[in-house]
Image 1 (tube, rainbow, N blue to C red):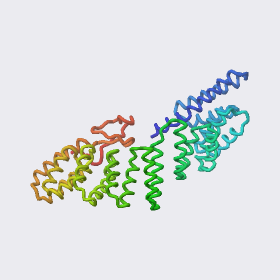
Image 2 (image 1 turned 135 degrees about the horizontal axis):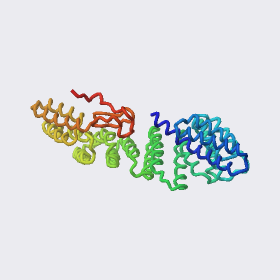
Image 3 (image 1 turned 30 degrees about the horizontal axis):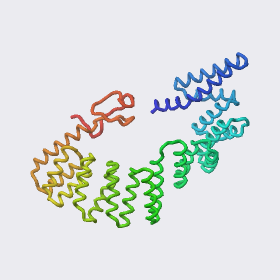
Image 4 (image 1 turned 180 degrees about the vertical axis):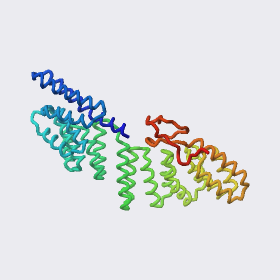
Length: 391
């Protein structure tokens, strides 16, 4: 972590160093005494040396000194304001950027740059109303698309989803950057709000807009399913939940209990089994297998369910699957030796697939020990997991 922190400061201060170097070069080209140019040059290179030697605190003080020697340079002052803000000296950054905004003779580009910096200062200090005013003025003049991005952030913080959507659309139009997935999330926030208020029609309208923004929105599908369940429309809920599972099978465990309840109320066991069989082909987790095992048990008996689960676990070993297999074996009063063979095979596969060591720094998992982590390159951080022992 210390290594990461050092590089963070390196990249943070590098722009300041570049601006300071430009100041030195500019001053070197003007008519100044050799002593002043030499003093600036010496200060700059000392600061750069501190930066390269991972001594950011000393580098900061020297670059601040250079900036104090050249208060008229706009770029230096903007960079300093950013530095103050990142150091947590937000009040100091606000005063500096306010002075820049009021400075006469700025170009339009410099004015926009100073206003953006000031708005960011206000956001950092929690003065969202002032930040909103600054960014809204810039947007009204069509001067800074970045101001739209900041406004989106403000309206998210205030949970003003209508304004967040409006500004996201304007940002997309101004920059060409797709904003559909974000807009869909905002529409789902509105749908959640309408659903909580009992306004199912408004919720459906927001869900429809979410789909228009992002046709594969998982959240919109889950919300649609819940709205239709509450309305007693199980066939529509089934379509919505199945849409979620097909769009992103990783969310299958989230919707499966509600989906199976809908199938049960609708009396469509055949449809449920067909869907679960389909998911078993596309989803490598154990959830659809266990659900289908329960259906096989209910319709065909415990022996058929145990045989089906044992076959499935050979291809997708799972601790939950092992527990279910043991339960079925006990219920069937079957030959324990055959079940032990199945469990031994499943356990061997789990041991092969699971890591035996993990890096304490970055979480990298490994089957064998490394003194240097292949991922984060730290030394001595990979240790045996607690559930792994050599005897």
